[in-house]
Image (cartoon, rainbow, N blue to C red; front, side, top):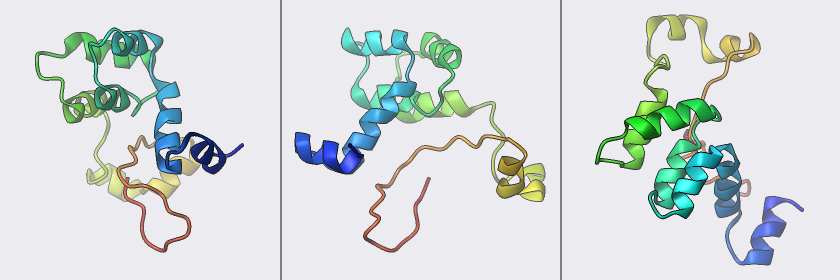
Length: 121
């Protein structure tokens, strides 16, 4: 059953289903913190930007009082090279991924396959 079928069965949109499935990338420790009420769903989803559980836990341990989702995403990606850096521009995303590189991204817009348009990551 695809995300549309799951969405129909539970009365939510396919986008919501895809977001929740993405939570499978979150460390079991972070999931427990969420269950204990010490993280919001938005904060938990911010940790899903990477599948590196050790990195997620490291960032969580170093969080201060300000646990805004954008701060969690920023801290998780602070060691990444920006797409605007000269080496990244020179090599290009396509060549980088063809060589086995991984470009982490967070989906900030829903995907509507029935509508034309760009997808922003």
